Length: 133
Image (tube, rainbow, N blue to C red):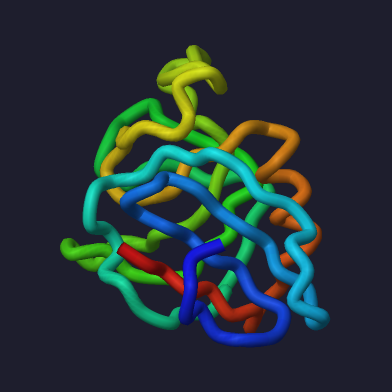
């Protein structure tokens, strides 16, 4: 877990490491996982979960959709950024779970199905999300 990521129940996302930790109120790591996001997006800082949906789609890329979206920030172009399952384009996964841990995508944070379902249930509206470099 990176240093100086706050205290209490929170999600910590290290952009440079492409890794996420879920921390409980007692400062224990509940779960940690590799992810795939966009280098430098969102900017390091403190955010919070704003909304969730079981199913969502890309406004920028036709035919791209994903499940278990947990939104927490806005991207450079103003679109929502959140944690979600590896997206599918026209029904086909855009990367494998083995490829998580590397930079991929246009802003959101891709996760394995098991990990994103866990996060979706664990991190509700208002849960702090700390993004580090």
